[in-house]
Image (cartoon, rainbow, N blue to C red; front, side):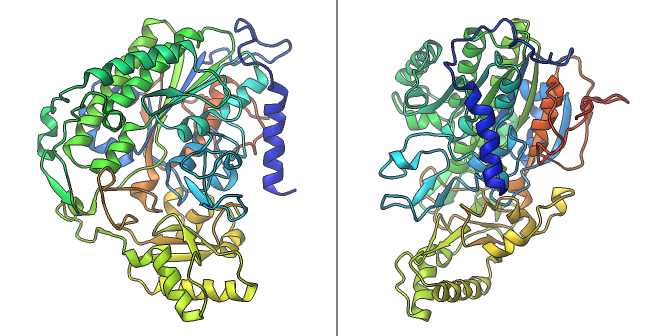
Length: 558
């Protein structure tokens, strides 16, 4: 049986038996004959993803944290976590956190991929859409249908049906990849408020949050004060026609785009999460609940302003404060909760600033690496129509060959493209799909993996490209910067792969483990934390023992 078929059967076995109205159940007791949770299990498991919160940012600002991030830094700290795959983007990264599976198994190979069989002119498919319901990717119906495996929240609900599985985020793909197919409530920011899945009703508490957020938007704001420790980062830097580095996030009245790319978005997501804790009585039943929270502002700010300016310094200061308020609200409610915080990927600062800060090799990808330019060169060489000969989302990552070619033409086109690309000084490697498919799934510590192993971890044959292009370290796959988009991520290098993984629960013994672990280790660790017993081959990751002494939090799995 293929993995894809096995994965679909696993999802169906968990989702279909639970296909009933999500608000029709009592939250007071588990279903008859359900096994009891671990006697010391937290009643609420909170998984927080901070989009683009690299291990580098955590290390750089750690000494300045005094709020929620400071609390988490006094738990079980894994400063060298890895999103171990090469496709370090939002959707693949979020898909690993609560599934315990790498993108090769979640099927979420990128934020977007090309599917030349879809019945629309634009063949680009967004990772969190139902492409059968949209004429174009920009006008889509949000869906979790592309995720091949269940999340931890779904697995917990399969055993304890009264458990709640709730997800909130600044992005639809983040909420859906962490929540999964069977979500009791899910909300994400869109336009000027929080929305939910098509066919579902935006609940009362989300409407209340939208009203509160609307008041902030309507009033506008002069911006944030610059913390003293941010002063060294407060200087202007230009990237093309854009100048950044000195922003304070002033909010013109009614400007939803400025609201989204500011610390205000994270605060709104956490406020909504707090409202949902109250409305759904999370952490107050006898079975564990799961609350997935993805905070997107760090990513929007990283893209729009880079990672080393005053803007990112203000963002992390405000994020630390907002998380502190969120945890204080939970404490005030007397809820027994456990937290994990990580990121979907890291990030790289804009090359223009990096070159001023002792990294002269930092540069933007050559426009010659874009699929249109590659198509023109190879098409001219082989006498093929260059229109759409190679299709991709940018200068690196998966590339698809136009499907109307004969087998011989396709082989010739791929060979010519590989020769062309490997002759470019910015290209580190080009791997064909058959090479990746023949490569065993990597094992061992992720910092030692070769480039082909990193690419293998995000290769899923039914969706991945005909070949994948990896750029050299320090080359950013963004040839031309513009307003709101001066820096990016998505490389196979450590600055995009390394993320912190922080666990915290009241009373736990603090320890720090600097050796590499993976984000796929989170789901099995949380499963053991609540006493969810699963077969040992359920996850790609392993349980991390959060007991700092001779005991173990991993228990004995069947």
